[in-house]
Amino acid sequence: MGLLSDPHCRRALSRLILRLNTPLCTLSYLAGLGWFLALAFQPLAPRTYMSENAMGSTMVEEQFVFGERALSYGREFAGHKKKAGGMPVAWLEKTMWNLGLEVHRQPFSRTLPFPDETRERYMVKGTNVYGILRAPRAASTESLVLSVPCSEGPHNNQAVGLMLALASYFRGQIYWAKDIIFLVNEHDLLGMEAWLEAYHDVNVTEMRSSGTLGRAGAIQAAISLELSSDVVTSFDVAVEGLNGQLPNLDLLNLFHAFCQKNGLLCTIQGKLPRSDWDSLPAYAHSLQTLLLMVLAQASGWPRGDHGLFLRYRIEAITLRGINSFRQYKYDMTTVGKTLEGMFRKLNNLLERLHQSYFFYLLPSLSRFVSIGVYMPAFGFLILVLVLKISFWAKQGGRRGPGGGQGVARPGLLALVPPVLICHAAGLALYFLPVLGQRVATQHFPVSESEAVVLTVIAIYVAGMALPHNTHRVLAGGGSDRGWMTLKLLALLYLAVQLGCLALLNFSLGFLLAATMVPAAAAHGAGTPSPVGGMLGGSPWDGAML
Image (tube, rainbow, N blue to C red):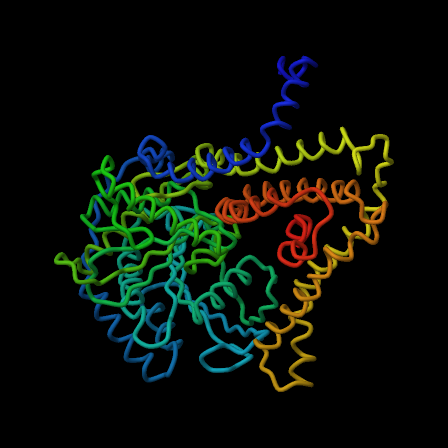
């Protein structure tokens, strides 16, 4: 702070920024990319560890021996599903009831904005079936969830069988302090969202559901199981949720610990962890796993049913059983013991998972990168915009158009029209495609998806006129000073938006910064040429849209 408070040091720093602005921007951008690539190195990715004291040890004796019963349930479920042409609701209710569970069903329906790709239908109807195992040692104040999506065809039949076998085994134990909900949801994400909205008595997606829901306690954690074979060679865990949300790292560590205890191979992003971290192939393997997670998180799409639990502050992961050509196979008994151990440890929780990280990247299941380590990579990219803002501000203060001084700066009111125009264009991109879908399909021979694409293209084509027409509303008739003021505001707006986005979804913020910052910084501060306006426009367009 003493360096910045000294006026001589401030002037020297300003002269340095003006003289070496381009090399500093280039160096900062390369430093950001280099820092990100270095995240896969061992010094920046320490080993994972359990932060929650209640789950700090895996010293529980798993006694699940109902592997054959799980296969029998799975075959019976597959037969009834094939006979019913969908989820056998009546059979599931009867079976859960015979196991001693409190059984409920939830019919739901959802009107889609577009017809789905498989059946060309607008209305999706389905039924969720779930059973509640009431805790004998508590007053139903907390609960855990084991969910299985009922997919079409032979998928997840074994997962339903294993869930019913676990319910049968859990029913005979007396140490449960939390209710356990065994849920079979239809239509994957639609059914899960319908159940979560009804359970929490909210409606954010216009989902219609009927029937009285039986409720257990507040859900502490959830595990979604996907299993389509009698034996597995490994388990792949999915952690990315809606809009890049991630579960507490302790839940992932718990799964990894019990997989190691029972000898199960576990992967993330389909990649097995390596032990030789010092070699170059191991670094390339870790970097590939890290990049796959960044791309999955940046997409904002949940990689399993667990992603919808995260928006309700429920820690959840999805476990997918993989049956590949590896030599070692694991039966249902081993898989059931792993799930039993996880639920027994979650049963010991005295409060929600909160002591470990919620923001992290995973180069492997055994190592993690915390938010304090990966955020400097994003900070170096944003520093490019800060340097450009300082450069243009100092340059504009020293000389006016044509080298003169004392030229009146455009008022802030002159910047209101382009701001409103760009925000209106952003709102048009958000609302018009869906609104124009109905009009386009009524008057033109196009489908709903084609109408949306054509509407987006029309908005983008109209947006190309923004760089050419913005100078007409600026003071000075499109002078360099007016454009410089507008672009300074645009860069500041872009930096703030990327910073806020990176706090919510680092992967999306970093990828956008890596692509948008060079284009915004490379553009000059003067009046744009027609070719430059057509290709890139000003940084304002990217910041606003």
